[in-house]
Image (spheres, rainbow, N blue to C red):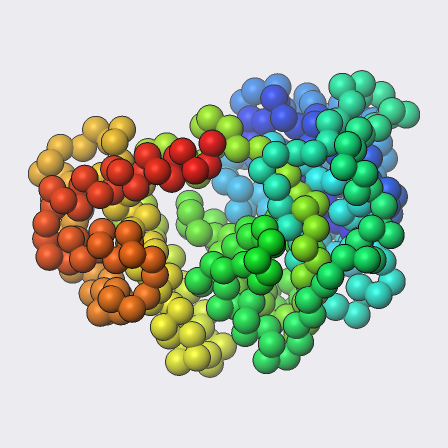
Length: 363
């Protein structure tokens, strides 16, 4: 059986579409765990309606504790052999669960798939239990299609290739479109999660997904990558990955220490040391662009300088900046060089240009 865990927080606009896409799966042996994380909109009632609609749907209410706590609650309560995470504002394809359930996948520790930002199917607006049909213009709705798709297998030391891509994102195939940091678009073994106590980190507001996947990959012995889009992100205004964020300076400092601690605990820090510092440089650029010099920030110039000073004093960033000349893309190198030289105005300008470029790229 497959356990599909859906954390729900104020998702009334998208929740039915998400649940309908799961119920329309060509595989029927699954359970859906809706974890209502203290929603204040109409989501709780929608969850209750969905649970009444199908006996495979279980509803758990909890006080608002964040997406990590909601996913952890789902892991603790689920009963499936495989665990799948779906966000309430996203959808899955009809054959996603069917591909996981195939017999030739049962000896594996993980399955990895592709995503798309533009759904190629439309969920029926009729929410009757007998009608959860999907319209699939592309025709990719049967597991037979997946059987003919090129797959990549990883075992033992080959898993290092995937760990490298968690820290330094790079597609496995030129035409691939996967996300090595997201807990979605993949299937995890519940036994591995339980055996090693792998859970999401509630103390992190950003980056908990990467930490979770890093821990899991270090314990998993095998994985198959199927480059088929089975998960559909809904990028919309107000998404958590967009807009001005506060607390990133402190969050990413904790995140980097957690990543390093995991690598050290698994005796592989030296193997991934350069990847780790590349990841730290990425985080530093992210903090500059998304918090300190965000165009919608209300902070004063003095406050921005104070935050920059704290970054300059961070020993991990100081060490990572020594790698700046030969790691990462040129725009990031230029941004971080200006930061390292304390060229605050130029750092601000490049950060804001980068912000607008990234926003256009994701719309």
